[in-house]
Length: 338
Image (cartoon, rainbow, N blue to C red; front, side, top):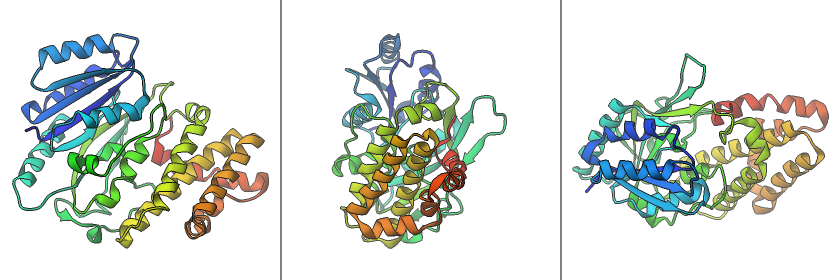
């Protein structure tokens, strides 16, 4: 059985998918690479099939009608046979030496007495034209190289959140918790990280720079102009997170606090984008989003609205909105706008 399944959602990725696939191939027979061709119209399908022919014991290829990033992740998960599961976007890649370290650690843990639900590693912002690379690490919040529970987790700083790039979930956990991402929707990676968390009982943090998160293409989903043009999809994901956190019972107080903090930053990102768009329609959408949270849970609404960030997102008038823009810098650190 494979230790790790790596799903690569691909849509018209022919120009840059080689680097991604090549970096994962260094995992050898311990890894299963699942290329999901999500209705591409370029040479993605052809290249994927060529890889499968060359590496039949490592690579699976699934061709499907276009369903968006979330549906490609769903397909990858359905076809995963590895014990652990990671999503690697086709324009990103992994550090090969770090990948080998992670695989060896997973093999060691699998051979032990404790089942690991979530392995966490660092990721690096590979921003086009920027020589100094920013590393998102978690050693201030998570003890290094220890089997943890949520009780062992320390405080996550603002801007220090678990993103899709930093997590490797146990495959069976994702399947058992019923994770299904919405189709034809961007920004569902937030749901991918967020919704399985209450099912996670054990964590392990490796202070290695595994994932390389590329930022720089103008058509990229985290380009600020693109995000504003797709703001309704951002809001839809935001509302699904509200629905989720206000409907489940989270026993561990530290985990619940973390999930509320994660929701808070999502509210900040949505609000900032709507403020920067600036039209009356966008400002009305911002107000409606906060009212949606209020209707779902006044307690959660009050906690988030009363926080410093929450207050800064809801100051009245042009002067208030200017102050709110300061929250943009925090949103930049989280999302990595380009």
